[in-house]
Length: 284
Image 1: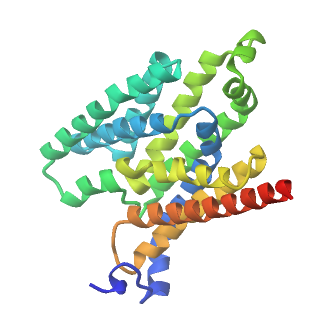
Image 2: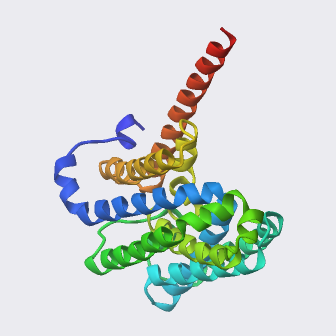
């Protein structure tokens, strides 16, 4: 086994035109994941992303078994999970307990229907680890439509939702509909998770929705800069992962997660360096 097994740029220019649809899909997913990431970070919903992805996986597995559109099944599963979490888990402790119940149930349900599915094994593997390859026009337009809904919904609720995230008690006192906003955001999160599952699979969805924002948070505390860097890092991870996987012909998800993790390590080092210099200056 050599380095070319994992990174290989032979015939790279010939392969890129074959995955143009996948690259557009990765670009869209990176953009949406980067936009929603700061709000996930602000509301401490990292665990909720994982729980939602498992029911998204279950919905996709059921759709695959029944012969329906897998993407639509993933969306139904994610939105159902998001609504249930929004209704049952108002407080962080209650929400995490609810997620802890849903997560193994969704994973077990998905595994059950995958085992019953008698089609190609690559379809089973792809639900867990992602398989955005050879995206057709119908899938791409579905992705564009869902992404537009997510972006428009976030734009409409961003200010009151951020206010409710930072200071929920004051927000309630001022009449902000925090519970309705929470449920609406969870639905938006469910839609985003369903899209991300298509790229990196149910098991690795955190690499797109959590890691880029966590990396950005290491180098900035300004909300606008955080959002911009989150979008940049998520897009680089998604598109870069697709490009790096072309030559070896391996699944996309390990490359997406590796690029995302390396960005986080670089930002972590830069953040510590900057904070260390600031501390040294204060001592001086």
